[in-house]
Image 1 (spheres, one colour):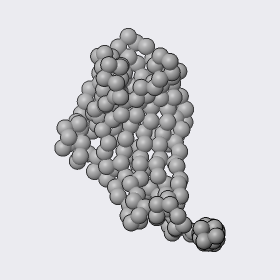
Image 2 (spheres, one colour; image 1 turned 120 degrees about the vertical axis):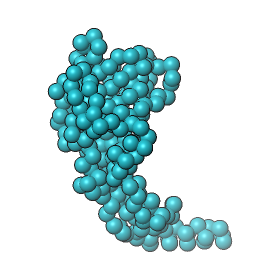
Image 3 (cartoon, rainbow, N blue to C red; image 1 turned 30 degrees about the vertical axis):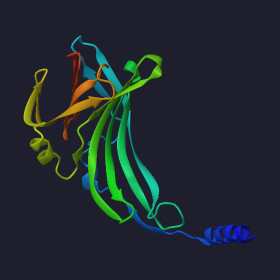
Image 4 (cartoon, rainbow, N blue to C red; image 1 turned 180 degrees about the horizontal axis):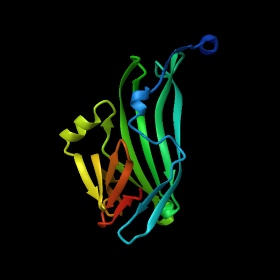
Length: 208
């Protein structure tokens, strides 16, 4: 009987709990500006064999989540824009490109840290397995400084007779070293993704 009474008491207290929204935490316009794609863009690349790879209709979207300030139980919550990304898809290898800005918000203290910028290229292999190439992560407020310190920032770079300025040469890692993947992604804040270099030596360059 005591156990039943205790369970009923806990249930009654839980049902009386009314959590409230403490704040709305969004990415700032300055944070978002490091990704120049607004959506609906089409990207076209040409490779070493003159094949054209097209990524259609980029879609930019935000993800909003309710994050409770405690782990489990009844507590107040923050409505947080946890990420903002642009997603491109191509029929080539059923591949996709993503540019993501991730909010660094710590729910338990209510503190927001510097958001980060990241990139992903993924494609489908045999048996529908997906191979991901992930690239260097950079803080949005100091991407040039951090990239320079990591020696992945160039004042200028020529890709197939086109000169680009302030280029991030982002090294990529892959879940399987024996798989084909893009080991370098080239990006500028004014031109976007301008190229990808693959482990087989193939180079994709943006068709302007």
